[in-house]
Amino acid sequence: MKYQNREDFEKVNDFGTGAPNDGFAQYFTGDSFLNVLVDPATSPLFLANVTFEPGCRNNWHIHHASKGGGQILICTAGEGWYQEEGKVAQELLPGTVVVIPPETKHWHGAKKDSWFAHISLEVPGENTSNEWLEPVTDQEYNAL
Image 1: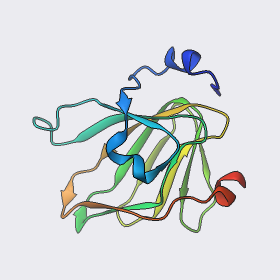
Image 2 (image 1 turned 180 degrees about the vertical axis):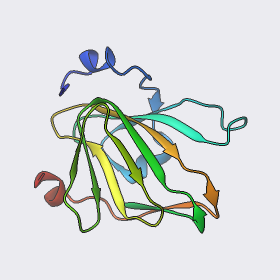
Image 3 (image 1 turned 90 degrees about the vertical axis):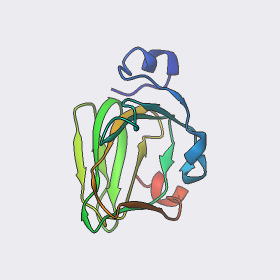
Image 4 (image 1 turned 120 degrees about the vertical axis):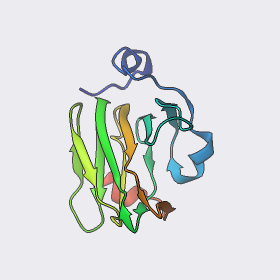
């Protein structure tokens, strides 16, 4: 279900919007919010709810790893998009789970007319890193 009104969206965003995602704002078009769900000091996994305002999306990026690694998205509220380089964009709805292998160039974010949230799970691995790349152009995004 699409949510244009933030107040209505907050009623279904069960894992909480959290704080403005200022630490990664340079890698997003539009405003995003981050609610870390586990204490990184005590958990072997990084798990956070990421919320995107309508039209917000992250840049193309790659999760690198020499072994293991990658990312899993668990979509929880609103509507969004996920796209791997060279492939057609995939609609994201509550209940959608996307397993992103390491070394896969991709982006994800909200539809232009809906708030969107997903839980992001960084898959543990060896020699993991995240490489942020170019923004998704307005032309690419508006074609969806």
